[in-house]
Image 1: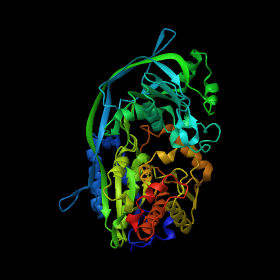
Image 2: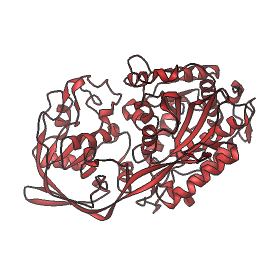
Image 3: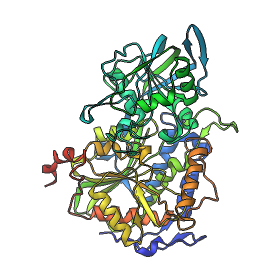
Image 4: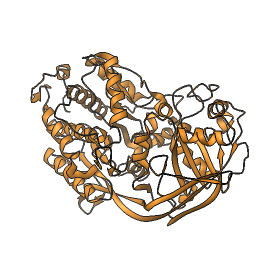
Length: 551
């Protein structure tokens, strides 16, 4: 068995090239920084899937895995395995500039793509969107949840109409407590809004952007929705998508409501109650644009270290290699969305863990280091793997995901995305205590982080999975400084060209977090137990269906 890392590994000395861990391999902070710098450089063009940047990115990750001593862990071939798993995707682009307008009382108003509205390329497979004077209907939060006795639609006929919906769920700003308070449920995610619009037979859906309930600014919405779109290849894409999907600015929504003699804030408050009913907005929307759909193949990258006792059992470290690619220019004219923190940092940390494990004695269970594609387009690489696993999910002991992993500095605590309860979290908390660190529950559950990272598709299949989060209680400056730095990142860098590597990054969190992540994986890979979900978890029943395969 490989050795656990000592508590002393959590110490960081500025300017030290290598931090002593007391293990077979030391974590090299400058090497982690170099991986981030390389993957987020302009030469990698924002790591967009199905571009020449994908080829370059995958080649780099594979080269680092090879150099670390990992074995190919992807799709089986005659006599071995590939380094990758092919992920077929629908790729869709708007050709030219979409022509979108609102009409109220006979007066037409054009809407500017990226400024007032952000419509996505259709993911239905169609080659054009042609909507003419479709009535707009406000449907509150657009939720139909029978188990919560909640239905925003009340039987309304939405065929050939455009749904206007609020982001997040009814409890975010009050509500009646049916959605667990501020912690976002899946009903609050924009992905759910799109899915429900398709189930309602609507012609399209527009999500009203507001900073707090969305948890990010309009720049993030614009940059994420006005470039190339992807989806998994579906038998019937119209079951999941309407022809037009997009967002509108809050100010535009307020004006739209006012023109109909309605008060936006009053109707938002009404939408927080169970008795809410859809409200026609007395305006119509027209949208015309060409779409280029095509089926492409992207790739997940997998490196593996076989276990020496139970090699058919697997522990997965994961992170997404993709970002937004080349898109709309920012105020500086920069069009490359480098994605340094999101998520070159997660891939760099995962590679460093692979190097450490490769130099240590083998673990009992096999370890897989997986860089997944198309997270930014809806967790598509991990979704595909969870539906088409290279290693059986029944005997996958757990998934430890790393997304935007390098925080603003060394912290006394750590967290995970969301508030799920599971044995894998209990193990993480225990390992943290051994290193003198405490667990802080996700302080921003209203942001829906549990549903926004690559552990989620595994959780839906019952596999214990977490997404590790950097600590909030910084050694230098505490929670107050951490919150301030986080707000600056979200406002000025998240999903923007400014998310770039910098030589003055504070990397004091790298060794402490790598030590904790290493120890968690090491313990899980050498255990003869199987962590499970809490008895009240919605994922426990799915896991229970495969219990016989773990006997």
